[in-house]
Image (cartoon, rainbow, N blue to C red; front, side):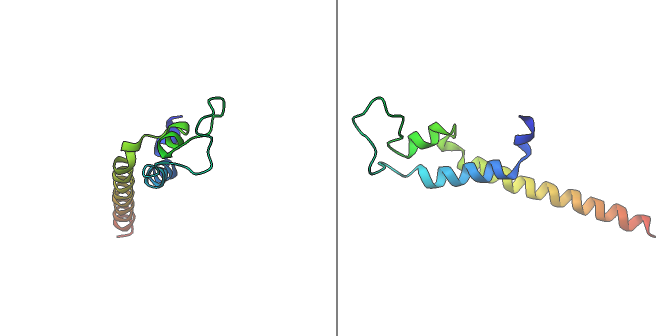
Length: 87
């Protein structure tokens, strides 16, 4: 479970899903009056059904940007170490 916290795709998918579904007020063709059908009626219910929070789009984007920065710093450090060994 902890490995999913390192996955870029987890944050990208959650941000994409929130961006697409948070603004949907009604999904046409869903059973509005049926109580026995587990069919989401709006975007909020879709996000709730996949355990995503509507307020997480910007934190997810920030985490992805931070991850890119950290990977670049690590790569730059590795490049410096490798170039110093050759001299």
